[in-house]
Every structure is written in C-alpha cells, then in structure tokens.
Amino acid sequence: MRAIRGASGALRELVELIPSTTNLVKDGEVVEVPTETLRPGDVVLVRPGERIPVDGTVISGQTSVNEAMITGESKPVSKATGDRVIGGTINEEGAIRVRVDSTGEDTVLSQIVRLVEEAQATKPRVQKLADSAAHYLTIIALLAGLLTFLVWKFAMNAYTAIAVTLAITVIVIACPHALGLAIPTVTSIASALAAKAGILIRNGEAMELATKLDVIVFDKTGTLTKGEVGVTDVITVQGVSEEELLRKAASVELNSEHVIAQGIVKKAKEMGLDLYDVKNFEAIPGKGVKARIGDEQILIGNANLVRDLGIDLNNWEADVERLASHGKSLVFVASGNKLEGIIGLADLIREESREAVATLKEMGIKVIMLTGDNRQTASYVAEQLGL
Image (tube, rainbow, N blue to C red; front, top):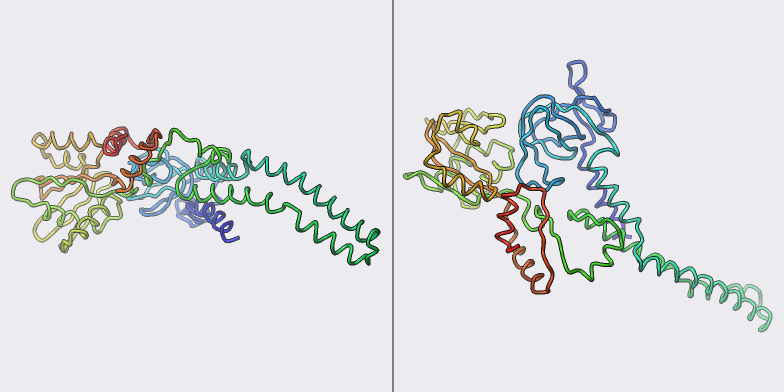
C-alpha cells in the first residue's frame, strides 16, 4: 500500500506544478482567483518567481522562463509579446501579462499526466497471460471448493458448518488473487515513479521489452546533466583576476532570482569568496542588472546590454564564438563602460553520466541523447560524453 501511495503521489506532484491561484486582470484591477476558474481569453498577471498557471500567449512585458520541466531547455528562454508560454513553467524575471489559450485537460502538463495514466492502464503481455491464468485457476479453485464440500458433507457425513468451512478454506488457499494483483500494481508504481524522474512510459509492454534493449535513448536535462546552470568558464581582462570578477558579479546577482544569477552566486560561495555590499540594484528586463559597489557602477548582462553600452567586442570575438559554439550562456561583466570579463555558464554534466554511457557501450547497447535544448548545447554535451 505504501508503494501504491507513492505512485499516486508522483502523479500528484506533476499536477501540483500548476499553482492553485493566479492573478486575474479584470476591469483594470488585479484579482486573485482559483486557477481552475480561468477561461480562454482571460488575462493573467505573472510576477517574477511565480509559476505560469496555464498555457497562453504573452501580450505585454518581457521576461525569461525556465521551461526545463517541459522541453529540457536548461537555459531560461526569453519571452516577449506574442510568444507562447506553458503552464507549470517558472517566470524567472520581469512581470508579464498572459492571455489564456488553453485550460484544464487541454494544457501541455495535463496531456503529460494523461499519458502517464494511460501507461498505467495498459496491460503488458505478461499481465494478460496472468489474467488468463487467474481466470482458469479461479474456476478450478471454485470447483475444488465445491468438491471439498460434497466429499465432507455426503461422503464423510460431516456437519454442514464444517463442510462449508473446509470448502471456503480450499477456495481461499487456491484462489490466485495475488497473481492478478501483483503485475498491475508493479506497472502502476513503475510508470508513476518513472514520470517523477522525468521518464514517460507510453505503455506497460515497453517495460517488459526493456530486457531486450539494444538501443537506449537518454533525456539530457536532469538525466545526463544535473539540470542546473553552473559556471564553466571565467575570462577576464589583464589586471582583473577570475576571483575578483566572480566576486563582483555574485555580489550584484545576489539580488536577482534569475537561474543564471543563482549559478554565479553558487560558484562564488563554493570558492569561499566574500561578497561586496551593493547599492542601487536595478534589473534591466531582457538585458541584465546593474548596481553600485563603492564608487563603481557594475553592469552585468547579455550581449544586448553590452551593445547599449557601446562596448566593442572585437577583441573578445574568439572567446565569444568558442563559448557560444558549446551552447553556453554568456554573462558580460562591465565596470562603467569598460568590459572586465565574460562568465560562461551551462547545464553541468553529471559525473556519473560518463561512467553510465561507457558501461552501456561495453554492453553493446547503442546510446542516443534526446533533448529539446539547442543544437550547440546538445553537440557539446554529446562530445563530452562520447555520443
């Protein structure tokens, strides 16, 4: 029973990715309402750090959205007016207004849950065989019980109560109820727990055939990789150390909820760097952030921010192209109008992934990586793992 409850809980966790309430924009006012009351055409306000309640289209605002749980894209995806967003994903920065396109059973997340439920309901061949055997064994058990009653009642002249008791005993012992329950229970638990781990099993027969695998396809994000963005490269100008650049960047990014900012802060903490006190922190939607450290104006962001500052990247072109070819996110760190360095971040590869891939290859199994991430990132991870 505990295992069954665990399987049900795994599905429930998928459903709970959708927030129970949301901010409905109505007659110019923002009202908190249950998500289930939304209808296509409604407009909702999604603030930074909140989960998007339904599938829809951005009608105002600019932000980046963490879609890893749906597409496998490890980096937040920029969203602006006209872009589609998926219910259950996380709004990382700027506030946006979203027009509701799909609700309830029509959303992407609901379709994933339905796929898992269909997998649980599918009977593999071994279960069909067990059901057939259980059918005939049940008939045999009933006949054995009837025969026991007749023998004890009429041949042995036993009391009726004794004959009935013995007949029931034979039926209970011989009835193959465990055979009929064991396999569907295992199928249900396995498919639900697999879904929780990011693996969608389309039907029970697929699990049965897994013993004959000669090709295995891995999801990238969260399976071959950690599913979290981390610092991989730090490039600085002469006179600025890697530690100093990370210290400045982490000090400013400490005030941001962006997943890339969190990756920089985590790296600084791992290195034991003491962070500066910052003032006048300000987010620049779609571009980055800025703040003051002492007398310095520190700006941290993407290439669009650098262009706005009028900084020439010709001397950095080789480094930018190298990191971009690996699908890494580039964070530019500037002091005033002077670029001090570039921080490269990527979805970190699990240390055990290399061993797992190598082991499978030794077993003669072909390994393929499947991802919704961009081609550059996919190629880099494949190269690192020898795929």
